[in-house]
Image (cartoon, rainbow, N blue to C red):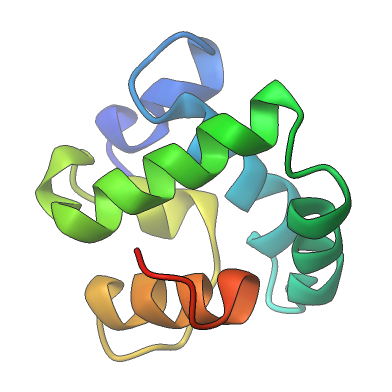
Length: 100
């Protein structure tokens, strides 16, 4: 992976660092724990990290090109056919039918 794909690992204040770090914590390996992530987004929805995560997820869904190439694949393991499909599924899995 190019260094730009990992920019958020060394700079927690980088754009979308919270979103990518949360994904990295729950979805990095080939046995992702979406259930734990869903629990965190529900139980801790009001803490700053999760408020920022949700805001950044919305922004990335609206414009996936805001992330450097390979950043999403570096942060999360997924088998969806595209980044857009992964992001749409992730939103639905985490927030149900809530509008993006």
